[in-house]
Length: 280
Picture 1 (cartoon, rainbow, N blue to C red):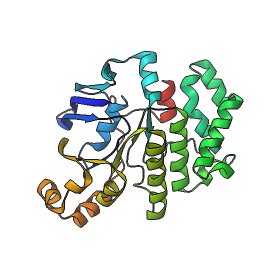
Picture 2: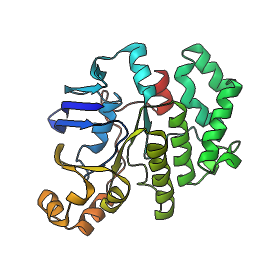
Picture 3: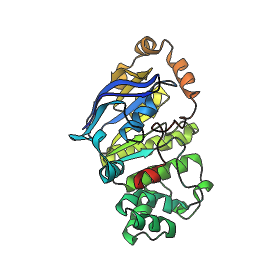
């Protein structure tokens, strides 16, 4: 069970997330929607502790995540995989090594650095990585550089990397915002497969309501940093959407699709790449 208790984040005079409380049972797939500035990305980054909360608590199975430091925090980031809009792959590195980066926290410190630099990962971990790539139809691209892949392929590599962490929870921050409709569906199918087959809890920021309705068990709608709706997809009707955002569903999707990529915030607001986060 993931629990957010009055979670807030302020950047100077701006409140990005305002007293959000939420309980997510294990194995649920939750879609978080909202327009630019709603606080979606900040919320997910606080859960992963890439952004520090200004107040409130994050609990997972009774453990106070907001109190974790050092190795305990690195262990949490291993159990809480993060998938980013811009993939966060090492573009000059081959696909297989990018996936193996998900094992970094299993080889902490200098050993992890050596493993990445010289690709000296144990045979069983290389086999795990190949199985993860095969699961997403990417085994044939294992030795290609990441920058030779399409956006949809790169995002599936990022999902495979997250699976290598053996996470309990996956946070996907606008994972399909940069993709065409065909690749977006492929990536969402992959996330749903991870959720259903592996029983991994998934929180996914989305900018199209129809995608959230199709793939998620539950939708959370945010506006101005506050949670305005929390319930099953069928309950987020056109009239409810207009009540929250003052626009039709078509207008909501159009405005949300124009949302710029998440900015790199000032110190304390932005976090490292996934690889850096795991080894930090």
